[in-house]
Image (cartoon, rainbow, N blue to C red; front, side, top):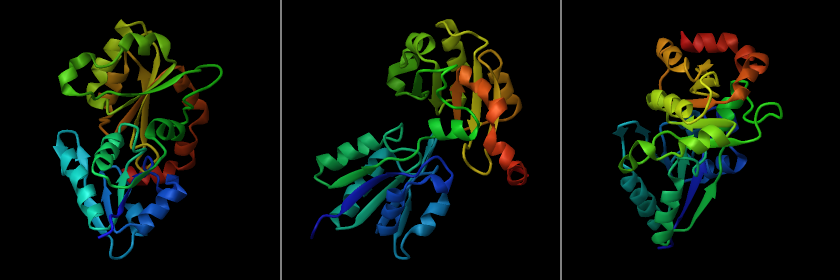
Length: 260
């Protein structure tokens, strides 16, 4: 039997309109779709009627399928000659473990393609009215995981480099680690008054954004009961939000109804 093919597709940050045209094509042509928790379910409506949909979602501490099982199911279905679309929130190569899946496929001789997606660190920030770069505030930008491998302990990040060398920092998967993030940035040279935004479910109908500083944001997040999934944005560009918060201004009524 002819071996099929796997497409590692970035579904974007939540708004289904931010899916790429090639990503849409991969959904429409798939025999099997393995999709993650953060994928907007509206995208699955574009699949063929006989397409097999496999939920492979993960929540912190709660995995419907572990990564090894996901890797193997991609290989197993491709070996049956199927066209498999692995649909991942954001971009597959930005903290999506797409590199591990691609490596596994390559090791087993499975043809694959990687279809980039719009990552949340940029998109959620834009929808919150915060440009990650700006001539007056930021000439450097970093996307950082706040959830590293456990065996590396709490010092898996180069905090001094982040605090002193990067103007805008987007932390992924960091709400539960917010206290540690703020303390480390301050202790390694970032001013305690540095602006911070936390964007919950960015680009979606339930988007919520709170702002503060490195010394106040933890209390603000707790008071507003902000949880994951959220992007934490640190830097002077956060000040731009009050002037260009276009999404929440344009969709205030719809957002209020969605939260009700």
